[in-house]
Image 1 (cartoon, rainbow, N blue to C red):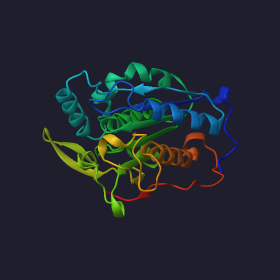
Image 2 (tube, rainbow, N blue to C red; image 1 turned 30 degrees about the vertical axis):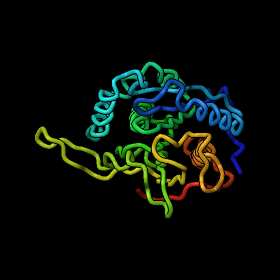
Image 3 (cartoon, rainbow, N blue to C red; image 1 turned 60 degrees about the vertical axis):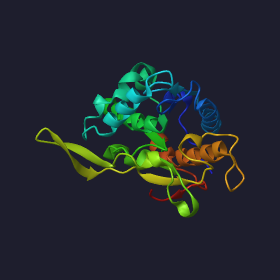
Length: 258
């Protein structure tokens, strides 16, 4: 069951939902996923859903080598220095509607877009600490999550039999925040996402949003990811709306670590 005491749209200014793609992706990548998820959230809440697709490191027409360097730099930003994120800087203009609004923000990032999503959420929360923000990372490098965002951050990864991770991108980076040490970077405390969720998709890193690939359970990768992301966003209703959830949804992914 879902809570029924949502704020009115006029009080809430709607919901801002953004999908952030990773490096070297095609124009329109994650488009079907974003459209379907936006429709589900709008139907569940009765609130308008705004926002769209963002490419924090560029599409496939931009140098992939340059994009890889930018993501790697952003992953290694020292704790508390997320305002220096290149991914956020590239989409700052597109995020302005979210920054001006007062309603909840949900950022869903794939691959390097998950790193940019965490950094963008940190920036939004720093500017307006009372602003409800949630993050879903899918097949992303390990990037430290600011403590204030941990409980509202879900990390999803492709898995094989037994829940063992099989997405090589998810092995990159570290959840240990970097810290300055005499001009050099060392590793500080562990800053994990609040939930780690295994996704038994067919295929690997590029295949999370494939509608034609079928999982062992018979559903498509796209259906599995949509159901899982929607379920976990519903689980974040209290953080997003300050409302008491009327119950919990069955989760398709199981909590596990890569």
